[in-house]
Length: 540
Image 1 (cartoon, helix red, strand yellow):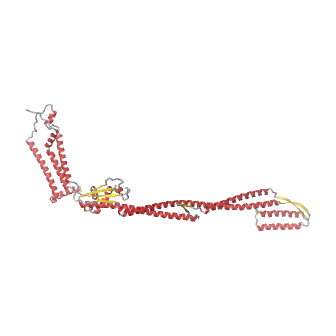
Image 2: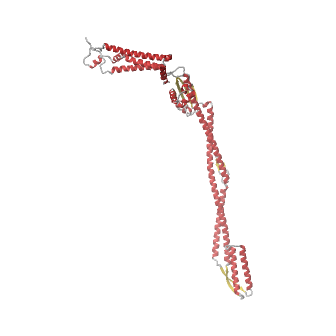
Image 3: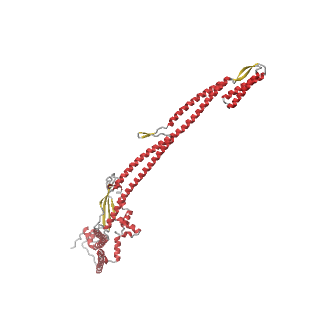
């Protein structure tokens, strides 16, 4: 009796697919695993040499070498210029024969094999750990390169610090010498100013220097007081002169004069008067008085009076008579003499006033120059104080730099502590052939499984009676297997034999080449060996 076909679970269907398409899974897995295992054996194995260096802060404040150089150590050590210098110093044969382009590629490949790490540390720890690893197919080269590279880095850091400190020392020393020269120049300028203007030396007043006033300032005050006194005297003399002039101007120039002349005495008197006139004229000529002179005017007045008298005597001839004539006013003459004396005194005071005023003006100019000199002295003194402060600061810095140089030359000046020196590796550690082989097997299985599943579930048809039973209203009672003809069976067998033979040949060929390369390279042709070496060169 026919029964309904039971539906299978999805796991049963999945395992059924794997069972039906087992070769689709096995073949890719075999091929990829063969390639992966061959690559794992052929690929060059690299020896890894490592080192650890602790870079501490020699300044002890968290801001020195341990924090600055350590933070950039990864970039500094991996500098292409430094790597190129190390390679040239090691003079490896395969590097020295390269041209410029190949040399650049070689350096880039070397950098790929160099790993530098600076693990994070507390910023106030005052130190920084630097780890470095270098991988190479030759253990000796791995150690030598890493050792030379780290030594060069440490040497450059120490030399740079020494050079910076020495440069700072030289700069400070030069600055100190320049400041000394400036102080000497300021001292010479101060001395020259004091000598030029007669300024007395300054007196120390505690931490300051007190400038003493030159005697010219006191002398100027004295001369000004004398000038005021002369001005006062001149003003008083001017008042007196003006009063005398007013009094003189009120007087008449001539007054009447009465005289009696006897007839027998007229001729003799005329001779006497002529003699007096001649004597006065000769006196005027001999003395050389100017018309403005007081005595000159008195003599002229006397000559005028005598001439009036002579004229009267001549007119009288021989008769005796009493005559009244106009003669110069003696009072006005005396007043004029007083005015002349006052004017002489006023002129003398005027000369003294002019001379004193010129003297005070000259002393004012001199004092002004002295004030300018004092201003210059003040500026020079302030500049001298500033330069002294700069000199003291420079001396302090110079002493600090000298101590730093002494420390750098001592054992405490080396901030590097090599915790692990570059070692000579005894066995290659990368890449891991077991990991490559396992990964290739897993990759092959994954590829085969993906091909099997995609090939099975990509069909647009029913794959079993269960698929039919799930979609039909009438239960499926039985199934009919796929009918395979003999021709189809022969084709399937031939296809499987061809695929199996190719796979077997592929596996055997790769296995033989791998074995021959590992143990008997003489069995391989030059072309195969060159191809393998080129392949290996891409991973060195």
